[in-house]
Image (cartoon, rainbow, N blue to C red; front, top):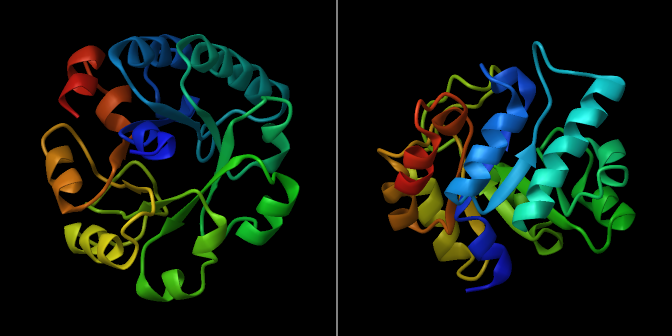
Length: 206
């Protein structure tokens, strides 16, 4: 299995707006429990901006560095260099993959894909992995699209046998195994960890 596929296995996404505790405390616990990648997504209602956002990013980046976990930023290209990010994840409405690849030729680039039309219009050959979903209905993102189901994972895997794929949207310890069985290399979660009373148990069960 490629290093990128391995890093997608337990992919944690978080910003301070997702947390009922300090995000540093949550990420430290998740890192100890065995997450394999982290995406800093400081976006939406209640999120930090400016220097506060940058300072939190540095703290979270240091934790990832200590545990040798890839640190990805969500669509904010201005954070990539100051946070020494390993990569950037973009959605269909963010900066184009072509532009991001030109800016960061050696970084990991992930792209969210939720439909056949998006797939057709996406330069899949330029990305390192795709986020497929939302697999299940999710309340974490207010702008989340309609759930596409496990069939979308299976379809993508048939079309791209070697492409690293991570399932996104509404995934938790109860349904994560079904996402892997459908063909994903890993699962990405937010609330399954940020709202967990026992983070170690939650991560281990993903």
